[in-house]
Image (cartoon, rainbow, N blue to C red):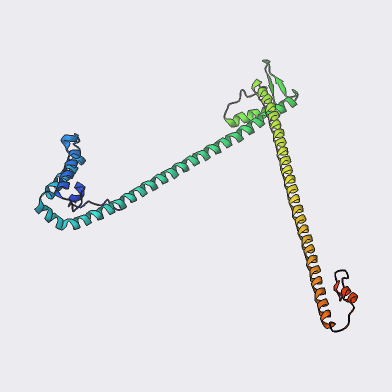
Length: 312
């Protein structure tokens, strides 16, 4: 990344006082007094380096611009100095934008890194919890199976020692000993004891867990049936609406076809009447010189009562 731009050594006195190049002496004096009150160490009590430098620039600018001769000499070089400061401010804005973009990219990278670490930690915890759940389930199932095997043995593998202690060598008790050895817990004694009350309590808990799981499965099945029934009702309602819409469209088409046929019949009847009139008129024109009884002419003219008279 490029280094920060260096400000020009020559100062823009007009910009330091906040006035334009065409400002008169009164405006320069007023601007100087206002800025001097804002930055004077004795007035504000601020004796920091930044404030002292600002007050020094204001004092230098005023000393140069209040003299007409010094101001005239400075105005000859002001365009060059102003151009340098314009380039400096433009480069400074570019540098600040680059710094802002770099800071934002670093923050985004840090955020992505934190999210990735959090996701990795979450996945690791989820994996650990899943492994622990599977191991616990397998262990509980093994305990439950061992208890069932012990109860099914019906005290066939019991052994009583000389001291009066009773031990069991059924498959469930042997599995319990092997499980304790695998888990790193030392067995109670070289000879296995009968399962204690904790295992019986676990067996009762397992029964309750199975009953609850069965109840949850029944509830889920009922809920799925209700959802399926709602979907079927919705489909039936939609099918009924589509059927009604289709019947309405068909009825409308039939009405349109009937109306079209009636209109065609009326037009055909009108065309036949016009043709009969033309035929009568032509016949009258051809027979006007001949003798024609009035009754005959009346029958010919009354074509409406006798359709098809002239080839129709």
